[in-house]
Image 1 (cartoon, helix red, strand yellow):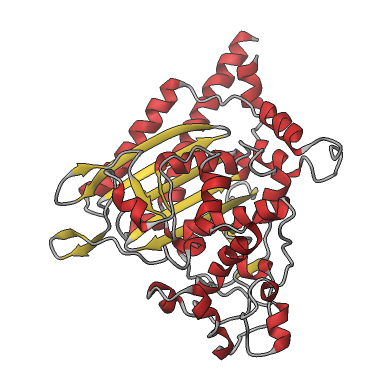
Image 2 (image 1 turned 120 degrees about the vertical axis):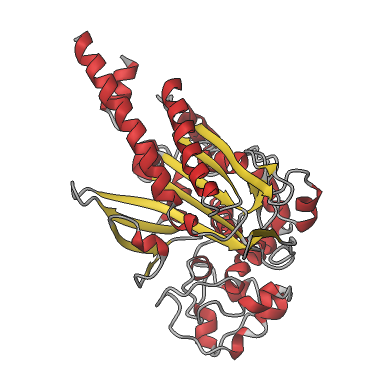
Length: 424
């Protein structure tokens, strides 16, 4: 009977978890008690072994084709359904000249996927009472200054994490990548002419976003790296995740970055960009296995790390993202985009059924690595793909893999409904 129920009743655990404590009905419970209650409510995932094999074969074929066409050097994938990792895999090579194989333990730089960690980490600090989303940046970083006193005192943590400070697009990203300390960069913000009032428009940043890490350091009395390890990596068992160049190069299973050349691909040197001054923006390293644990958490596992009501704040749209030129705006059924705290929130409408859906998403690019992560709340599904090259496949890998999964799940449902009808 359990098998039939899983099919007939759609899995909405992620959405339910996000709103389960919004009403305050369980305010008398301790956070630990709430976490235990939520963990016990997570369902088993119905994804038969036969269909896992089909998933493995389909994804292998997908990346084999990309490798055959020389689109990529290597890739690693994590797919999570509810509280279970249903697929981990590696494809291609860590180094194109050595022909060493990528697997689920291979470590990549994840670039701006790091922003999602920064948003969650700030949320944990808010949950612990160390921060408030509307706290003024200048209260934590006294030398933070914009063109006017009014503008300076209007910028909040919320604006920093949602790219809505009003500063020009990618202000001083060049200085971040040159390794200039973030506290020195802060002194130069006053030279910029804001393009809007705080909260007025979306304007993507790295230097300003990195200030969220500085604020976390101020309220915890620890380095951002230490807080990441203590609050996220360790409790989620992300055993190979890190946020330093030194830790990365010590690994014996690194996917090396590559650049395209006339005859194919050429390995590049690892660089130190973002590790010393902007970890929050793009300084995290991780394997597909690590990212699988991360996605499980984002789908509602480990509520003792962060309660779903707090995670709801991180995923709530704060500012609309305009334009139609971004790659994700070309995905089928795309309607609109917003930015939360370190995460993009995309709205879609099915062209056949007119059903709306949401994807929580981010892409990343650093040192010629490319990465993608997406959470599908209505399906309790998450996908992450890590590449060691810049490539066009990254633009479509999320909808491509999602379609593969949907087709397999649809086959599963149709087969089991028929079996259930026979039993009746």
